[in-house]
Structure formats: C-alpha cells, structure tokens
Image (cartoon, rainbow, N blue to C red; front, side):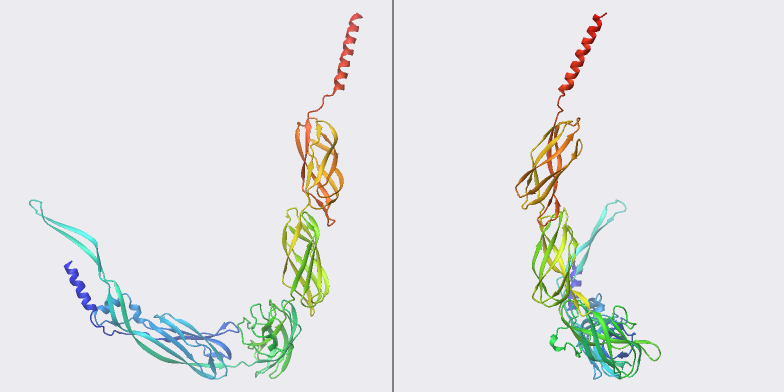
Length: 605
C-alpha cells in the first residue's frame, strides 16, 4: 500500500508540471481528392476530375480529405504520453474546418461557407457547391480553407484515485525437517484507476487557398422561347400547347425533335397567375430538377418533329398533352430539343423553362341525394348537383362497393350552366346482406374540354338503403298424419311501408307435400293482417309434433320493384292419424258373414 501511495504522489506531481508542445510529423491538412459536377437538369454526373463544365446551373462536387498519418510522435513528458496513448487519433484530426468556394464573374457561386466540426485522417468528405456557369472560357475559382490542429495539452486534472483488489495469493515456507511452516506471506494485487476529470487543449489555426481551374463550355445549339400560346388548359384534362422558339446557337440541329416536360402535381410555382398572359406567356421560370435524358423522345414526353433547325431560325412546335396536376395555378414547363450533330451523334440542348396557366377543375356541389333502394332489391338514386362553371356535354358516373352494385353506373346530362342545378340518376341494387344504413359512394362528372374530355375529382355522397318489409305468421294450424287439407295462416306486415300485390309462398319439405304452395294476399299496409291458405298433405308415418316451414312473401315495394322478403317460420301441428271406423265396420261385417257361413255349412252336414 505504501508503494502505491508513493506512485500516486509521483504521478500527481508529474501531472502538475507545466505542459509543453507536442512534436509529430504528417500533421493534419486539408487537400482536394477529386472534382466533378452534377447537372441537376439532366441528373448526370461528369467524370471524376473533369475540369470541363457546361453552361448553366450545376452542382460542383469537391471531395476533400485529410492526408495526416502517424509516422513519428515525440512527447516531451510522460503525462502527454499517458493522455494521448488511447487518443492518438486526435493528433491527426483537423478541427473546426471551414470551406468557402470563391467564384468569379464567369462562374457564380450560390452557396456560403460549409463548416465541418472535424475531418479525421484519411476519411474523404464530398461537398456540394451550387454554381452557375455563365461564359465559355477558362476561369479560376478559389477554395479557401480554414482549420485547426492540436498544439499542446494545456491542462489536465484527475478525480481521486480508485483502487480495488483483483487477486489474492498466499505463499507458505515449510521446514524440511519438521515439515512445519516457518513463514506465511499474503499478497494482494490492486487495480488502480485515476479518472480523468477535465482537460484543455490548445490549437493552432491554419488557412490556405487552393486554386481551381475550370473550362466553361457552351453548347452548339441553344434555344430561346419567343412565345407560348395554349388552349384552355384545365387540371386533369388535355390540351394543345404551341411554343414559338429559335435556335440562338452557332450550329444546325439536324433531325431535331422538340420535347417538353409537363408539370406534375407537386411542381406548382407560387406566383400569381396574373403575372403571365393567358395566350402569350414569355415569362421564364427558375430551372428545376428533372430527369430529361439525352435520348430520343419517349412516348411519355410530348414531342414534335422539327427537321433541321438552322442558327437563328424561328419555329413553332405544337404539342397535345395531358395536364397532370391536381389544381389550377401557374406551372413550369421545360422545353428542349434532341438532335444529331454534324457527325451524327445524338445530342440535346439545355432545357429552358416557361410558365403555363392551368385552370382548376370545376367545383361540383351536391344539393341532394334521393334513394329508393331497398335491401335485397333494386332502386334508383337521384343526385342533384350544381357546378361553378359551364360544362359542355356533361355526364356522370357512380362508383359503389358491396353490398351495393350498379345496374346503370353512367348517366348522360348534357350541357350545364354555371349555378344551375342538374340531376344524375343511377340504378343500383342492394344485396340481401345490406342493412338499412347509409352507404358511401363516389360520383364523377365528365365534361368536354377543347376536343377531349376531363373528369372531376371524386364527389362523395351517402346512399340510404331502406329496410325490406318483415312479416310475421300468426296461428298454428293442425293436420293429422296421412291427411291432406287446406291450412290457413295469418300473415302480418311488420314493416313501415305498404306491401303491394303480395303473394305468400310456403316452402314444403318432408314429410309435407303440396300441389299449391302459393297464396295471393294483395296489398298489405303496415300492421295489417291477411290470410294465406295452402293445400298441404302430410305423410301417414309422420311423427306427431310441431313442424316449422319457411314462408316468404313476394311483393312490390314503394319504388315498384319486386322484393322477396326474408323467410319467416310457419308452424304446423301434426297429430296422430285418425282411426278409420269404416274399415273396422267392414271387417266386423266380414267376420260375422264368415261365421254365419261356417255355422250354416256345419248344420247342413
């Protein structure tokens, strides 16, 4: 224990000594590993370390790394060695790294400083700098880098030491003659920990500038939009777009196709529609990321064949395209041309942007929904609506789900004036599984726009399904086994509407049979009772007891449609068969005659 105390005292004395600077080779630095650029308009990346960049908006990708490696480290005293022994990677890390790309008149940098808390040794980091290349010549950018490296361990302090035994051992020395122990030694090995409380490092600031030379290339073919004319474009519809543009490049685009990329639902520009004329839109919008590839036009992109497009030539391309947006507003469209150069290589121009104004879809409001659909029957649903704009050659369709099904799902309406009510009528069927509740449905209104048709978004409605009439069978008629007779049942209307032209039908099963299983009831109002009679016979060997047969009623509902009710139970009491007294009488007479004949015969002998 005394030795441990002395060791701790010496260690604390060393830690209290003043710190001195470290000395080590291959200290942290920041260097460029590679340069490339990303074209956001095409979604492609240039080859690594290519210094040729096209005009327009690009993203310059600069990969930096720290080349520091451990070759030789000299510590001036033991406390430095003790501290950095398990933390030596700190010496080869650049801290508080600040990178700034400085542009010029020809290439504008559109981002500020990039800060990294640390850049460890040999761990490349790719940084992206948005730039805009303007002119086509050799330019020089500067990459300004500031960072810090560790200079010394300025201060360190420890918590009180902690020690705990990790091993106990005992050694005994015996007398070789008497075999008695002469000495006993107990040894305990302790593990001592000196927790680090805090430390303070001093840093040295470094700064450097790295020149970057780039060559800005200008494409041989460049287009410029002069005028845009469009039919009435409506969200979700189709329309014709005419674009007048010119080739302001230096060379001819051979076998050129004009290709446009139409807006998608998320691409709306937040700008007032009034800023762009409805028929002559020449306002250019900021370029947006797209995936227009250097390929011949695909079927998904509207295209127009131009032929050869000479420098300075002005042409008009006409596109018939879908407007795949959800609502009206100002939207960006991109135009490019795909062409062959003088050597037959397939190339494309840089896309240019312009704006189009898209009208919103008509707003359709539901005024009322009337339904005379009954459970297990057919019926009509009338939907009265009103539109906020005129509609030409309008029609409507309905979409329903089980337990409803559409018998006629479409309805022609015709021309509709804004603000005037119009009606769509559909025939539906409710299955026997339906309940007397309101079921959801969707109505779509189709209308003519230019030379095509567009459709509104789903208009949600609720369809009331009315309950079918339930009936009750009153009374328990009796019949003897082996008998045939007319059984009469009282049928009561338990519903809330009148059953018209009702006919009752009894479903006979063994041991019953019937040659006439239907009975006309007529009209039966709610709560009314009518008799239904059936000629029924029962087998002679039928077991005497109560039997329940199904009875259903077919009737016309209020909507005039035939409905078959759910079966209800008709109860019949079967009794034991009656004794046939005539048979007994005939048997008795036969017996008497036989006896008389026998007596007479005997006397005659």
